Length: 328
Image 1 (cartoon, rainbow, N blue to C red):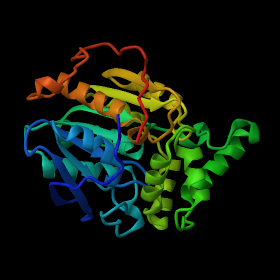
Image 2: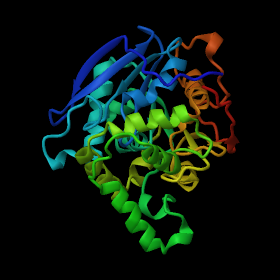
Image 3: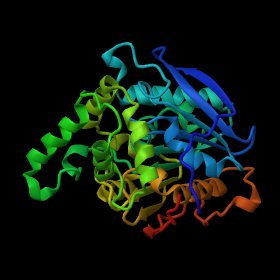
């Protein structure tokens, strides 16, 4: 099946004000009413990141995607205090209050820092009451530096590797124009060796558009991440998804999430894929979202609702190894 990596034009654009006054850019896609999905992207990304997933889901769902503060078209915080997991939670709460009525619920999907956003907001009643189910894709809750594998273990001690990974996260060096070398670095660091040229080019467009100051400020937050408490408070039915070649949040993080989540509906490990799973495997990610919606949301179109039977109270299912056809 062909996947397009071109931008999807939103049917509506709106703005949500966070607790500290930061304005957040929100885009609506798909149906004007019906089952709703809220998408929260990761570090150095933007709403553009979700284009392949949006394209697949738009025929059946109302979809809202927003730019994290300091990313895309959302405002950067006015002070350094505006960077942190509390601010991420504030922003998700503001977006969900803006796009969902009281009593209305959505499937909330987060990739990387977007998943951390959901964990950070897990105790917010305004978020909990509007959340039917959650997808945590390619993310972790704590101790990111020690487990990252961008620098291979054979090249140094654990302390040295942690220092190198930390510097990569906090660096404010401008990335400059997209070049062959920068694309090769991104393929190595966040994609899989089998990533297509279109996937690499699309990733480079997104990451290089993130401002150096904002990238470094959020990278510093990630070096100190500890959201295990938020993870245990995430009581909504939650699916976990990861690529087995993810160097930033390796499989061990996904398995840690499964252990701590109160209501995990299953773990999907995508063989050979890297950190950018919604770009490399949009059909697999979309299938997980559809399954969550079919099991935990009302008004799901029956012809496109492949629920896999994991309803409330289901025990976590075994690891699912999923392959996806890659063609562009």
